[in-house]
Image 1 (cartoon, rainbow, N blue to C red):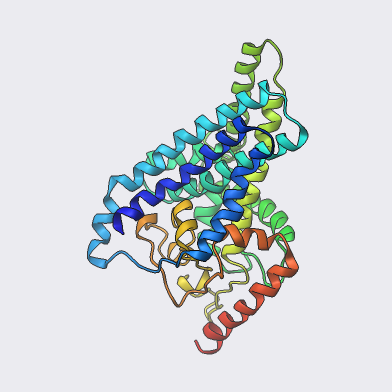
Image 2 (tube, helix red, strand yellow):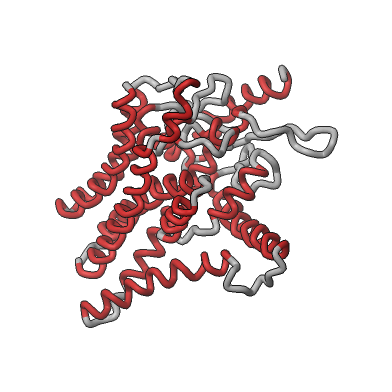
Length: 361
């Protein structure tokens, strides 16, 4: 079982393979990656039992230090960069119909956003400079580099409070949440970075301002490849920047769908001293479905992640007492796109969570 788990984390590489295979088969086959993520994975999650096992306490230290798990995430960085550059080549040299172009762009977003941002999230929490650098590289490919600031220094501090843009409110549709989270998350990152600079006596308009770096780095990245392919093809390849920004939009929208799911309706108690109670595994929705957790490097064990953000993905625990999603993220993402169905399924579970944590607690 231990070896199966180790190999299972390589299943994330199925997505770029499916994107490439779908392209070369052509036509409707471009939707193979979509069918895998949103049909086959939910079906497998439903048929295969959830994995609620945790790494034994005596083995946690050893498992956390194993290079294998870190190597998987490092390899992913280069695979994602390679598949994106390949996408630039495809989109600038192949005549695609509007539907094919849309399928290819959203398929790329499943790679860069579905798995890529998940890996960036994992690496961005780690203290090693190389891992943080790789996190920023992945976020650059989806134009969401401010996530590195807002998620670590904002979201993890304010989660499950009205002050957190990335915590969806009870009764809030995904579409309303998307606008608030994207807008306020960027503004929050600006404020957090400005505070950091002020403490060091550095002016806001400085090359040391990470937010300025984060805005221009994706533009420089796509601009460089646009220039390179333009020189190769002896024309201005306008298709590349359009494709890059469109797939980025879908990629970070996928992230916001996950944000919406992870903390829907979660609220921490406000204590008499004016502070909120400590974040615990009760303040994030959890899902221990085996297949989707392999694809997402156990991101769905989100309850433990928020309680202990420093933990590496391979040692995250399942907690029975955490609020449990009925299915993995692939299925829940589809549900979140239909507010009436989402509220019907999730509001009842949220009320049960409130009774357990607010009334009984």
